Amino acid sequence: QVQLVESGGGLVQAGGSLRLSCAASIGTFSIKSMGWFRQSPGRQRELVALIFSNGNTNYGDSVKGRFTISRDNAKTTVYLQMNSVKPEDTAVYYCNVQTWSSGYWGQGTQVTVSS
Image (cartoon, rainbow, N blue to C red):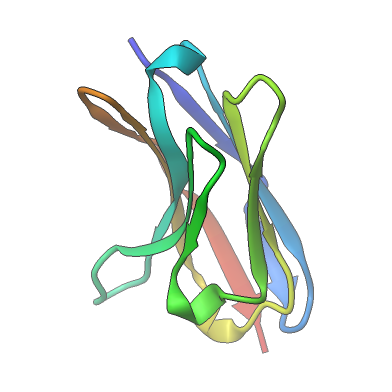
C-alpha cells in the first residue's frame, strides 16, 4: 500500500514563503513523477509542479518563477518551495505520485494566503 504523507501547509501573508513536503512510502524504481496539484472552491484541480524521474520539471503557468519543486537524494520525498505567494494561491494542495502503472494522491494540505 502506497502512502503519501504531506506537511507544511498553513497560513501565510501575501509576499511570504511556505514549503510543502510529501514523503512517499514506495520504492524509487517505481516512480515516474512526483508533484503537486491544487484545488480551490469552485475550481478544477490544477497542476502546480511536477518533477520526473529524470529530474526534468514542469510548472503551471501561474506559479512559474515563484515556486520551485525539488526532491531528496532518495527520490522519495518531494518539496514545493512557495515564494512571493499571492491570495490566489489559496487552495488545498495535493501531492501526487505516478508510477509506471498507477497514480496516488495525498490527503491534501490547506494553504491560505492572507492579503
